[in-house]
Length: 160
Image 1 (cartoon, rainbow, N blue to C red):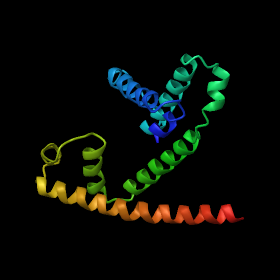
Image 2: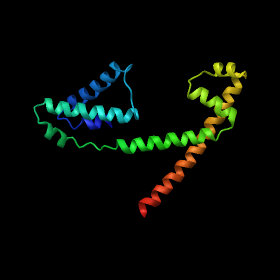
Image 3: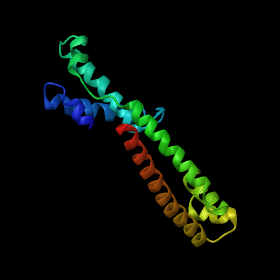
Image 4: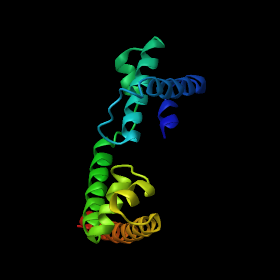
């Protein structure tokens, strides 16, 4: 999709250059960059501004560059979807049994290894693996069911 946005430029070489420059800039600032929303939304914005800058540097006026660049901006929709998914994940994690929830949070939120969790909770690494497997299976089912309900509700609202 990012390359597709960059194809608004007059040549494929320019499009490739813009995308490559965007990723190079991200790499150079990887230690200090703070992404507020999803990485995809951030990259779409970076590409959009680089394309406009490239068009402007190609002796086109900025107004013409903005007009020529008609990239669908669904950043708000993506942000809302991301937040809804994050809230759904949090609800589903809270629905896990207490010990399973604790192990899952230590693994996924704190980034602890199975061995570290086992040591901290004084349980075996196999028990940690079992808790994480149980949590992931539960989350998959819970979230799929919730998303199906959400899709159905959305379809009803759109038809109304």
